[in-house]
Image (tube, rainbow, N blue to C red):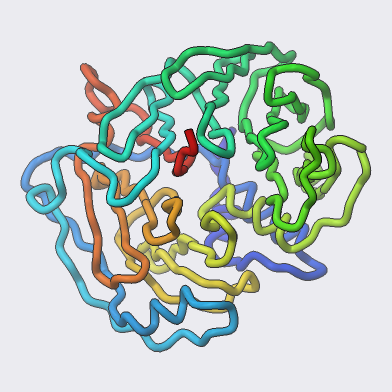
Length: 365
C-alpha cells in the first residue's frame, strides 16, 4: 500500500482521544502505521550521531507515577552516540524477557542472553500470551509453532494473511485475510470469517482486565477493528454481539502505530515528530497531556516497545542502524546496539528492511 504523508503527519500531531470523536481521530492514528517506509542504509564507519536525552529524574518519576501526577519542567542535554559508543553486537537484553523480531530473512526470537533463533521465512508474527507459542504468516498460510520453530498446526486462508494478533486469553487468534477479518482458535480449529471489507489495520483485543475468563475463554474475546469506510467496530467474537468501544479499546487500537502501552496498562509511550526530530514522550493521559520527553533524535525512529517489567523502552533508529534501549526511570541511561540489520541478515548485506519488534514478553514456560 502507498505511503500517506498527510495521515502520517496527523498520526504524530493528533493525541489519542477517549471521547465522542474518538473513532475518526483514532482511525488517523492506526491507518498511518501501515504506510510503507523505505529508509536508506548508512555507510558504517566512524560516524557519530546525536541524541537529545531528557534529564530531570523527578519529572520522569512523576510522569510514570499514578495518573494525575503533574510533570515538571524538563531540560534537554545532548549525548553523542556513534559507532564507537554503541555496542557492536546484541549480546544481551538489558532486562528479562524475549523479543519477537520480523526481518528480511524471517521471524526471529532473541533471548535475554542475546542468542537468536530464526523460526523460518515468515513475514509477520505474534506471541501467545505466556510466550509458549508464536503464530506467524507466510503468504496465504498461518502457522503456530513453539519457540524452537517446531510447527504445531497450519491453516490456509482465501486471501494473503497479515496482522495476526493472539488474544490475551490464548484461546483465539485474529488475522486479516485480504480484505476479510477472520478468527481461529488457539489450537488451529474453528477458523471462520468475522467481517468483510476491513481496512489494512491490525485488529486489537481488549485486555482481560476485569473480564471473567471462563474455562473455554468465552466472554473474554472483545475485538476492535476498522472497516474500509474508516468506521471502528467493537464486537464480542464468540457471541457476535456488537459493543460500544471504550477508551481502552481505542487505546489498544492506537498502539498499533507509534504508541505503546506496557504490560498491565498505564503509561503511554509515543513517538512524535517535530521540526525534523522524533521525540519519545511518555504520558499517562490518553487525552494527550504532555508527558516527559525521554529523548529525541534527528530522523525517523521506529517502535516503541515496552519491556515486560515496564522499565525500558526499545526504539529503532534505521538511519543509524541501531536499536536503543532507554531506561524510563533513569534519565540519560541509553544502551545502544549497532549494525542491527546485519545481525538479522547473516551472510547477507543487511540492506533489507530494518528489523521490526513484534513483541517483548517474559515467557512463562
